[in-house]
Image 1 (cartoon, rainbow, N blue to C red):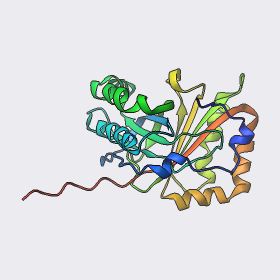
Image 2: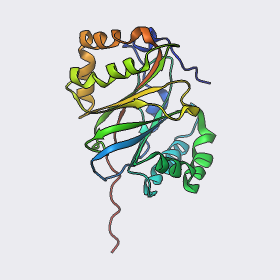
Image 3: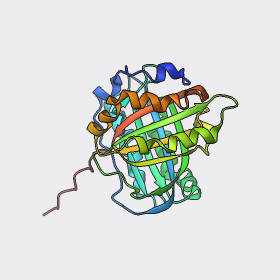
Image 4: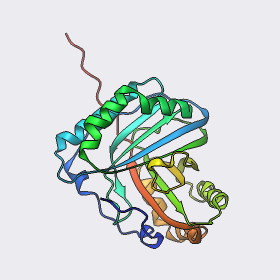
Length: 255
């Protein structure tokens, strides 16, 4: 079983290894084509660790099954697929699901929907080593659906006991001011602690593509300056990178 809660000094290391499962599986992801403006949007991120011995066909069934849930009425956006990078040598998540909703009630309806329950029971849980899920409310997103090819950096923070959560949130909210490569930024407090493993602050940064994400990492002086602002208040972090895949090809018309 995966041990979460890696010390911050290790989590911030630039050394990471690609997940073995990602080299074995090329699964087809799904996502929405809806674009809209929203004052508030509910973010739902799930990280999966697939068992190493899992057959590629089973992983594809999981991804395709989760992707099919885009058809549910409450889902504004859904993207699922393998991670680009897991930025910690101690964490071995392999896949990510990202969905968005208009309200907490819509997220609850998605979670309780029979189709969702069936996919989780039949396609997800049988091949899982670990699952982590975090939910928060984002303000003022200009685009609910990140364009295909966009690179996402998802970060979860676990605060030390007695840490000033509002202060940490304020620092995280200011990140886009220093890193102009970020085209969209979402941050908030987790409101679903059941599967979050104690992580209470989440953020999602959208980049035009992987090269823009790498450009951010190359500016280590500024990166370290931002980290130092909250380092003493953070117990551990989870950081993963993910690229929004292109839509699946449209079915050919029958003659």
